[in-house]
Amino acid sequence: MAALEAVKFVKDNDIIGLGTGSTAYYAIMEIGNLVAKGLKVQCVPTSVHTENLAKSLNIPLLELQDVNAIDVTIDGADEFTTGLQLIKGGGGALFREKIVASLTKMEIIIADGAKKVELLGKFKVPVEVVPLALTYAIQQIEALGGTAELRKKSGEVFVTDNRNYILDADFGLIQDPALLAEQLNQIEGVLAHGLFIGLTSMIIVGHGENTTVYHRN
Ligand SMILES: O=C[C@H](O)[C@H](O)[C@H](O)COP(=O)(O)O
Image (cartoon, rainbow, N blue to C red):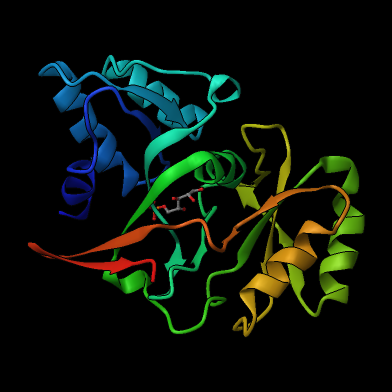
């Protein structure tokens, strides 16, 4: 329901950012339906997985490096506050998602109500790190009071679409996400992290057949 509500903001001739994950999937499927019925949009995927899904639906695509601005992006989140702060990157797509969000005029997050929190941080903060900087980045995260665990999938080190690693960083409940976001940005070798602060226009939360919308103040 949240995905269908979000897709109502998509108009003919828009450039649309396509998020990544099991929630964004529903929005991409709906955009595919509308494109098949004649909607004229061009889309920017936030991951290789989303790119492949969009191609399978014949959704016209643009390369991220060729785009100056994006009208609407629909993406998911791993945690959110009603103040529109997010943790993203549970699926490892955080870097492209952050570039796309930063280029986007209306960033719409769609999520299940169970992801709503008072304070971010129960979900570990994904930090994408250039492999050479792994040990240094772990030291720096520890110096900030966190612990960092190298993400693995099926027993193998998880490698992002950009050929980097993910550290899942635990800082406990985060009192000042904007400050932590800046501190993580200062670590050499960190490409991006999953704290999305000041990037979201609205969050649409699905509850069964109903939705609740949180707007930027
Ligand atoms: O890297 C993945 C993205 O940030 C997703 O938007 C996030 O992990 C939420 O995914 P899902 O909708 O599958 O819970």
